[in-house]
Amino acid sequence: MYLPLCPLPFYILHFMRYLAMYIGTILRALNSLRKGMKLTGYYFSHHKEIVTQQYPENRKEMFIGDRFRGEVVLTHDENNEHKCTGCSACEIACPNGTIRIISKFEIDPETQKKKKAIDEFVYHLGMCTFCNLCILSCPTDAIIMSKDFEHSTYDRKPLTKILNKPGSKLMKGVE
Amino acid sequence: MIEFVIVGTLVIGLCVFLGISFVYMERKVAAFMQIRLGPNRVGPKGLLQAVADVLKLLLKEGITPQASDKFLFNLAPFIVMMVAMLVLAPIPFAKGLLMYDINIGVFYISAVSSISVIGILMAGWASNSKYSLLGAMRSGAQIVSYELSAGLSIIVIVALAGSMSMNDIVESQRTGWWIFKGHIPAIIAFVIFIIAGTAELNRAPFDMAEAESELTAGFHTEYTGMRFAMFFLAEYVNMFTVCAIGATLFLGGWMPFHVSNFEGFNHIMDFIPPIVWFFGKTFFLIFVIMWFRWTFPRLRIDQLLTLEWKYLMPVSLANMILVAIIVIMEWHF
Image (cartoon, each protein chain N blue to C red):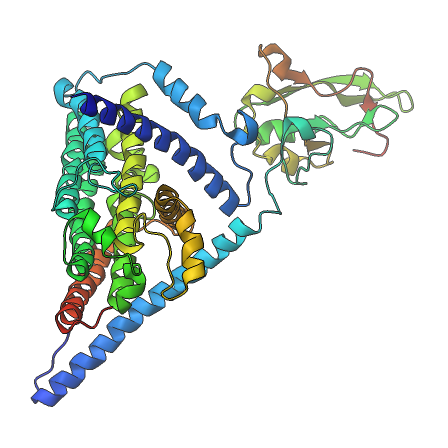
């Protein structure tokens, strides 16, 4: 508390002003506490909207946000064609070597030229940190994050996945 | 001798029952305030969840760290638990239903409850871990400072009732509870008592002693199994005692709610047994303390001590003088 050199009435005045400020602080603090308690009290007494989902029961109608990162999948269309050109940008982008692309050269039936294509898109789910960098780096948007999250197994072998389906090939027009 | 055995068994039973029911209540209140469901898997509506937790703790291995002070490490949880049970002694649960009627009941409570600091410091020191020690020191600073304003707000009621015996204080509220009879000072004292009580319990928003994000678990970092459960139980029993004292001093203990000169209403209120009144009031205060926990953010250690020494302490001193004037002038009812 700052007290200037001045006659006694001013001292008293100064003290009163300080006291008013002090009590004002306490009352404002109490009011803000009351506001917070009002909100939680409202939630407590209006127990209708629940944010929790009852997981194993609601497997069918479970809500998962669009940005959820479950695992990396290579999208295939109905003709069993994917968009992966085998450029291995994702393999380079991956910070911990989760993706390994084994490419092969096959001969284009139309032009009779050698062309690069993927043999195996190997994805080690066990090492993936779901950082999304592979999806961002893909120039042809071939891979996406799926919403499937039930990955637990008793053995780590099933966690090494080959993402391209057998017999699939590159979609036409994707370079 | 037989009396001692019976009372001892009852107290231990009460403590275990309170511990289990508070854990369940706490989790449900927390869930409802955060728009969640809370425990609902073990037993109907999750009622057996706390029992399952206790069973789990019983089956766990009790580890004593190699570098710890073995004797103190094993002694500390018992001291904390013992203090929590001792404080229960002078609390009147209903008319004539109290374990130890002494004429300095209130003083006894505030004296004995400060012993628990020793247990906590002992646990922190004996663990030989930096987290434990820091947590224990914080807890010590906190309990020692908040005991002052808790004591001063108790003195307000002692001055109004003119007695330190818990029985007499309850008896003095036959015509009306002190929070209604005591004008504004009693209300201020009640608010201060609840705040200081929450701080003494080391509960959020005053849980500096535990502060999970910085001290893992404070003074009970190194404790496992049943010895950890003892600290946990003591914390909840202390919560019950603080709320029971608050209910006895300010809300009339087991006295039913009476409106003066309103005979019909008073008669209906008299039909509710006193023990229900007592536990109803206590559980209401416990709910308020839980409400605090799930609403307010945690205080920093300097904010915590500022609140005590710059706000609660001067306010309760001024409040005490105000009450002294009221009592001398006989302005209270």
